[in-house]
Every structure is written in structure tokens, then in C-alpha cells.
Image 1 (tube, helix red, strand yellow):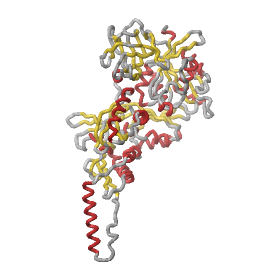
Image 2 (tube, rainbow, N blue to C red):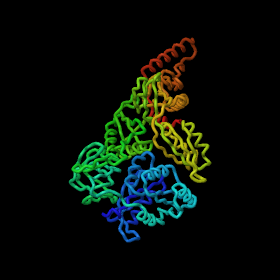
Image 3 (cartoon, rainbow, N blue to C red):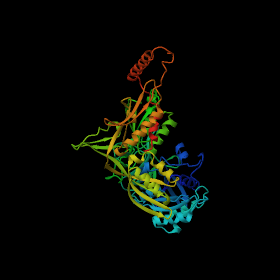
Image 4 (tube, one colour):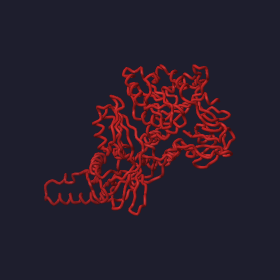
Length: 600
């Protein structure tokens, strides 16, 4: 294929701004849905979760052939991207594989935080931006105001902004014409040593891990031996091809093209996003820039609701891991919950998706512990230790420095809610930087937050306080020193490791008191007294008591001397004391879920 007739582009949009619907219209206009393919809404979002939530979780790519007004047949490669902040690294690699990007903005909601974040990523990589306003058919659409805010943001003329309705198909063909007109063709040398960048990969039960690649230099064909730069492993290519809603084999892939490579790679972890593939017989000297190993940001324990289902849960996580290399897990044991796994996730949405898929696809009933981040501890002898489980936090002592990850957050909202946003951000230890007006009715506030403060319910609270108008995006900054302590929960003097958490010292008293009060409501009454305490080290900071169930042992004593009643009561008291030493308190599943709902 002539490189000058290839266009590689992506779509940048906030959640539910119509990215997948616009992709559907492209597929229709280019007649890419052919033969026995069954049309459905959101063709590129093939997971039930993606279609239900209106988000893109897994990146997709599709090749389309389009005959433009100039008479030429163009090859359009749409490389779809995830739409959430948890997957920002995958988004950046998908954008690197393109030369242009469509900036899609909802005509009724305007520019949102995730749109802004991905736009800056695209501009960093010098992509050609095509601004598009979607949903102009809605009654609440405010096209002039949104057009003006886009012009102010990226410095384009109003005539360059294309108003469309992806649902109705209005002006969608104009977008395709603009793509072939202003998006530059791919660069690269067909005669140079082969180099291709992995922007996604999937696992096929019969053919192993299949990397989706953008070929930068050279060409690849069946029978070549490929080598991965990140792990130096080599495999023989069994098939190459391009993606057109399904895999279509072809003779070879050349510079500028997007496709897949099947080489019987048995481990999906070997096909890392952002890694460079070369040919072993004539290897390239240097890999493509920008590759890094994805590190989990949020950690949580996952346990089977029934301890007998441990093997079933292990098999389910093993299978899920085949299609999700960013999920990491190690076995762990909890005194309260038994055998389970310590799992690392890219973010809170990623954690929700994994739990939902375990429940739906593998019918696993699970309990998850309090999500937390990775902390860094430095001792007075300069020894450094990283922990992702609160139970491993050392007791308070001199000479110990504890650091936690911080993020730079951008909160976009109407100006009416600035006071509410500042109030909740101060409660979450946010460090205010600047306020920037995007337009008369859109403002962005820049904050630095501890990641642990926003992974729980900050986003939900933000939506509630701004009537759903605010949006949030954040980027990882690094570690900063904080005054953190380990908050233990004791039941009758025994610590419950699954309820242990790491909190800021100033919040420990309030958080411990609220947690004890909640547990007092949820733990059923026993025949003996149940004492619930929260403690920092050896210091108890709050205490609640679940009163015992009383039996009136003196009911049948009528008349007679008072010593008869005292003897019965003393015998009852002694029995309860003995029962308390050997009795076991079963903590219900709701208690572990309640920890996630505590107002921080």
C-alpha cells in the first residue's frame, strides 16, 4: 500500500461523549461491516461492561477503506483508546501510533477533564488535532459556546470546528474528508530494519498472546523470527494481518501500517504495551522511545466469600490475567478471611472492572479488603522498604520516614461550585495551586492530592456537590513525606488484619471512631460481651461495645433469700467470662464492605 494514502488517527473524548457511536458511523460509511457480520451499537466495545457503562476499557483498532472526494482510495486506521484516567499509559501509546486525533466534545456538556488530559498528551506527540462537536441534535446543545471554548483552548478558527450528530449521522462524512485532507501520512523507511510498537495485545486460547502493532520501519512477514526489546525473547511469526472487526491475514505488514502478529507467544506479559518488536535476522539498533513497565497504583485483597471456593477463585484470576497483563496478584493469608490474593490494579475503576468480571464471567463470589496505595518507608540507616499491605507497616518509632504517592489533579466545573470543591479538597489534604477559566461557564482547579485520599469516594462526593457537572483527571507526581499511622481494629483484643488501614495521624481519631460505631451496628450480639477498639500501636483511640444477649436466670426465683438470686447471677457471670475467652466472633461480610463506605 502506498504510504501517502494511509491515515492513522485516534479519537479523544470524555466518557459518554459519543466516541463509540462516531466509530460506528465511520464503519457504516466505509462499508466495513460486510458479509455475515452482525451490526450492533458500539461495535468496537465488545465487552458487556463497556456497553453498559458507556466506557471503553480495552483499546481497539480497525482498518477502513474510504473513497474520498478527490477520487483516491484511502486506508484509514482508527486506533481506539480507553477513556479513563486509569489507562493513561495505554492512551499515550495508542496516540504515539497515530499522526492525527479527533477531539470530540459533547455540545451539551463542553470540555471535560479527561478530554483536556488526553488532548495535552496528543499535543505533546505533535498530532494533528481535528476539533469535533458531537450531539448537536440534543435540546440542551450549546454549540456556539462550546465552539468558542474549543477555539480558545487550541487556538483554531471557528470554521475548523465540525458540528456533528454521530447518532443521526449528520456531517460525519465531513469528518472523514477532513481526516484525509489534513492528517499527514505516516513516516518511516520500508528498507530500514524492522521496528514496530505494541499498542495493545489480546490472548487467544489456541494461538497465544497476539500483539497489535503499528509498523514504524521495515516490513514483517510469515516465517520471520521476531525479538522483543524488553525481554530479548524470540519467536517465529506464524501469521500477520490487519484488523477489520476481525483478524484478516495478509502477506506482509510494511512501514506505516497497523495490524497484528501471531507468533505463538504463550505469555501475555511478554507482549508489553509500548515495547518494540524487531526482526532477529536484521535487528534494529535502538527501540522506539517512551516504553515503560506499567506499575499498579492501587492494592486490595480479594478473598472467596466461602473458603472452599479458593481454588475456583485462583483459576478465575489466572484466566483473567491472560487477557489483562496489568493485573498482578500474589497469594496471601488473613486470620479473618482465610486464603486469598493480594492484587495490584492501575486504579479504582480497574479494580471495579476486575471484580465485576470475576463475578460475571467466572461466577466467583468475593470479598475485597480496603483498597490502599503503595507506601515507601525509610529507616534511620537509609534502608528503604516498599509496602502495599497495611499489616506490614512498622509500629510508630523514631527515625522512620513514611512517604506516600501524590498526584496532580485537574477538576473542571462550572464556577458556581468552586466553594464546594475547595471545601472537599481541603478535607482530603489537597494542596491548591491555581484556578484557570476555560470559558465564562467552565473553570479548572489544579490541586496536588495524596493518591490515598482520592481512590475511595472523592469522585462520587465531587459529583454530588456539583450536581454531576464536575469532572476529574489526575497524573502521577511522585512520593512525598507524610505523617501516617497504621490504624488497627481489635475485636475482644485480637487484631483483625483485613480491617487494618493506613491513615493520616490527624484523621485517625475520627476515622477509628466512625469505623467502630459502624462495626457495632453490623456485628451480631453474642452470649458474651464483644469489645470493638481502634488503636494506633499500643494506644487505644476509640471503643465500642456490643452488649451480650441476657437470659433472666432469676425468673423462676420467687420469694426466699436474696443470696439465691446472687448465686445464680454469679454463676451466669462466670459462664460468660469463660465463654468470652474461648468464644469466636464471626464478622459478617457486610462489615468488610462497610469500611469502603466510611465517610473519610
